[in-house]
Image 1 (cartoon, rainbow, N blue to C red):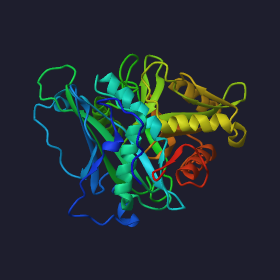
Image 2: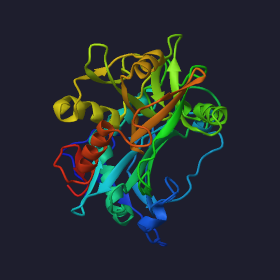
Image 3: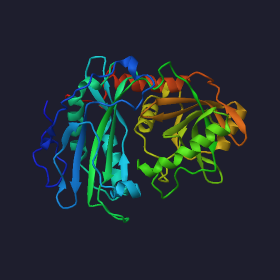
Image 4: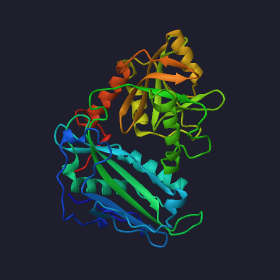
Length: 385
């Protein structure tokens, strides 16, 4: 099916109807599902989407071309000043064989927010989604079947202006690649241990922690290695804290949720708020919150909160026997249960132990049912629509 055409598109706007396709002359066989194990993010489909932009004429015609290297000047601003941003999103092959993208409008909006933070050109969200649809249709065979399997899409924008100076770029490139992936937990849920880090700061109020710019991620590699070494390899992720009160922010590249009983006996699901600009507005985060608010009784949750909370709060809940579940939420793992938190020289054990908690599991199953078309939802956008 051809990309959707618009009645009118302003000059220079991203326009999916201008799409051209150059197919590879060396098509590869899509990897079987069993070959995806242990290869998350390392395998790629045959084609990629590329769209160039210049300040004078706007967005060029979108192109689907064979997956391959990009040609860049060594003076490209993206290589020197981290003028780049990206998204992470998935398309799932449903039980009915149809391929659906999960809430791509939210990824488009968030990428435009990242682009705005970098003073790079934005795009029309519908046109962006249509371009991704066309790419997925071209590489349909690389969308694997089966629970936990998906095509992971990585749209990326880079400043290509060859200029050794800090400023707004005049040229940029938007591209997207596709990676077939298997279950994040190939052998079933494996809850992780995390290291609560009060020394390293992932983001701060007034910064860019609410965007997916590359500069937010490279500085987290060393703290993750330090956490691994400090716990003799036990901690797989860093739980970033902020301020003298050790406010909980994010865990690794995921939003983090805590389920506990409040002092007045209510079951509260809490996550850090977006108010300060230091928390990424995750698509899975938003989906968990909306499901929780719509289905509180079914989930056994009394209160759903986006508010500041601290590691001393978590420790007190654990000491009182009020801590119930802790989990991360993100595109890659969807739901990542946490069984232990290393904090301030001690270990906080989450009572779910080496299993996923019942509420965490309910979120995972509800989201999976939407991903694979078992439940009708506007969140699942068919590629062939």
